[in-house]
Length: 464
Ligand code: FAD
Image 1 (tube, helix red, strand yellow):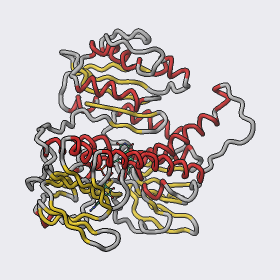
Image 2 (cartoon, rainbow, N blue to C red):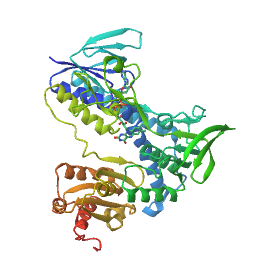
Image 3 (cartoon, protein in one colour):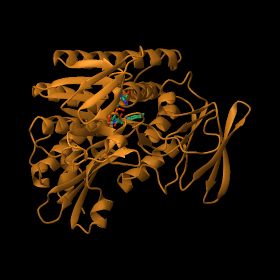
Image 4 (cartoon, rainbow, N blue to C red):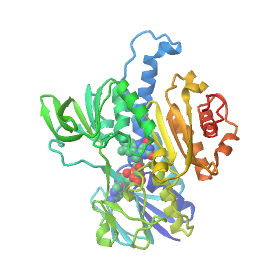
């Protein structure tokens, strides 16, 4: 029986472990902290628990618009929300543990170090060192917040995403350094919960790699909610000013000082390699990330790497898919990782979801494309939920109408993107999206209407 050691029990590692066990391997999973890793414990899941309550809160504040009469105050009980967050995590982590047990995967709590391609040792919390021989190793150690060397970054009140999730109370004001997905989700969260929020982003715009029209609509949403956004702006230093922090920012119009109670550093993540011994074993790394081939194997035969540590796309569903590919490769099913169809979602209000090529990419690659855009203002379900600001954009190639990209800003975008991912994966054409009957009333009807728009045939919009 083939033996496999998986280092790291996050969404990459535990999925790889389960798939390898399904295929008949003897699997040992080593985790130094909590099963579920970043995603379940301090990433995807806890952020979305908090954002879900923020959405409910904001809907209830606008209750009268929906025909609700609310007697008495509505307020956020941050401690109760923290408890809910902990309960959701506990339930999910518990579920993963049961699945690991069901698949007869041995879980060892400890910090792993690779000795040779065939041997791993584990430093356990009680000080004991256990050594295990293995046929293959899968490294799934994930990533951690990258903290740049800015003066004052170590001051009290400067936090990272993990700290922000468990902050003792909702801050009155917060400066968020970094306008990527994580920074913008936290900006939306704290703003909805009542904080004054500023975003400082070094690049010319927030949300890099997202469709340009979607970014400008999101930016106006955020600014309408009074979130201050400073782009092409760089934090020079942070200093203490009584109970407040002063963030000194160089903008294109000169230096400014942003005052806030907290500063959230959200400028990116770095691979977690410390103590793993990868370089000594000869594994090729680059900027703290592990290089892999399409089967997820490193340059050292028999050692694989998956998830954030590969730096491909730091997303939970990419980590899991890479885990499946690695497990299958080891067990003799050669299947390559395909990065062409990776949906990405942003859980703001409205939500953003996209998959495939953006219009900007199509232009820069010189692709002869057509686009169809359908505004949610004309979608019944969006009107019902009072979330009409947004649109669905379909990018298709001019010759055959193959769907190349779908980009959505609007209510339920993160749920309906699955249809678009499947369409691109199956190399579907806009005609196939059009001839698929979509249920009514749903936001997903807008995907069909956007496909119809590619052909100037939208039913519920004027065509030009
Ligand atoms: P991780 O989940 O980081 O797991 C790695 C595990 O390895 C950890 O548990 C760690 O303790 C363990 N480990 C490390 N070194 C060792 C060692 N030497 N020995 C033993 N164990 C070790 N992605 C999405 O797709 N959707 C989202 O909505 C989303 N939201 C996010 C929100 C936030 C705030 C953050 C920070 C991330 C978010 N992500 C999201 C990204 C997602 O969490 C990561 O892409 C995903 O967790 C990567 O999985 P992984 O298995 O590679 O690593």
